[in-house]
Image (cartoon, rainbow, N blue to C red; front, side, top):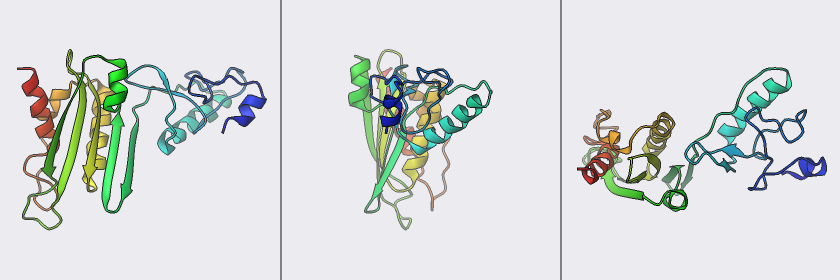
Length: 202
């Protein structure tokens, strides 16, 4: 809701959310904004983005409040990391979708995999879908999506961390994932996806 800002003459960004600088100052240096009404900088594209998530609003609230009280803190670029759950299926999307990535990078590629979330004979074992988006020219990890049980949130969090770290996509094949039959498969779906990416560069 930007009505109050507009009525005060505060500038909006190209997403129609409130335009702020890294200190979360608006176009009026004495007015700060935070939460679901502001633009943030996308870590991958470097462009302003509208990503209304509670986690980002929480961070921005602390930064804006601290700076309004005289501190000197900065909002860092963010990686979108969202999840929805319905009828026992959880779906996550982190970073850029393939469509979003293709708008910025003409060498955008993706790999997909379907794999068990646990050893098949274990109770509750079911299929998980995974998709990794990356750049063909330099292996830059751009995003991912997963669909399955609760484990997909952990997959998305790991991808978010790797994007923040600037990790190449094929490193997924080199991570030593946990293997506990009641909880996880012998070969993690992320490892399988990483192997597919690595194969593309041989």
